[in-house]
Image (cartoon, rainbow, N blue to C red; front, top):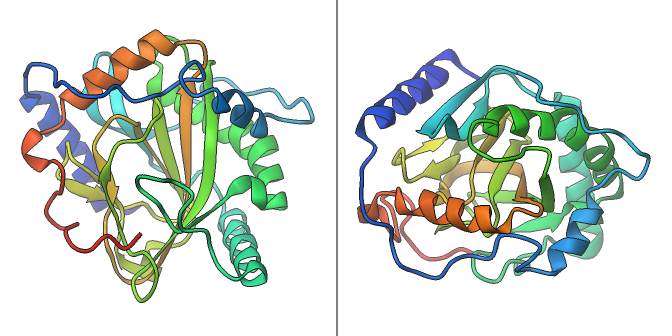
Amino acid sequence: MARRTLLALVAAARAIRHCTPTRAPRRGTIRMISERQIPAYVQTMKIYESETGVETQPACGSERVGIVPHDDGFLASHSTEPLFTPEETQFVIDEAEARAERLGGWTTQRHANYATTDVPVQELPETHKWFREKALPEVLYPFLATSYGGVLPSTSALRVVDAFVVKYNASSGQSFLKPHRDGSVVSFNIALNSWDEYEGGGTWLARLDDAVRSDRGHVLAHASGMLHGGHAVTSGVRYILVCFVILKDFANFAYRFYENVRSLDPEELEPMPPGIEGQDSS
């Protein structure tokens, strides 16, 4: 990642540390964020478990930029060096595009409320194997454990329950995703192509009132309850691999954590922040 971008993230994190607002918790429907509330998660989390007995590595201690301080850690975290090679990320893109060409396009209505142009990882055999046997146990779970050790009661309970490749295209299809919150505890995305291949884009975070752009191979993780969106791609194509993660067997904590995170977002930016207005392209 470019040094100027990292410095900007650090500056934003420091600014938020000193101006975190205090307000009464908001009322609203509590999102469903564990296998207790969504029985399907009991099955979907199995999709991403190793079939060869690969053990999940411990917190890796890799350098990262913490964004939005919370308790003894941060609500969002960005890698400082690419966690995946260009060859790995390009393979995911190629397999997704080959599937789309073979079946007549990408899926567009898989998520009811905030649909994305995507393809589930489990429908990409080689990507699924790589993700399940290497990416998750060796890289991603350790990165999340490092990022959220000071926030969550247990990082060993983190479980991916949904993973999908998303395509944002400035000239056709979907170019952005409206601000929303995910129904999980932590969400993360892997940048699959270079930021030189598109303009705009990035993950918009309400707490920053700005988009975080990630170069190829980098990972951005954030608490799922944070208001966020896919910032508009104004030219080119952006590919990311998105994952929703729950905390298995910690449903009560998940409820409290979600509502606490949600209550800290700036109310004036809901529901539609500047820069992401317009017709819903999903």
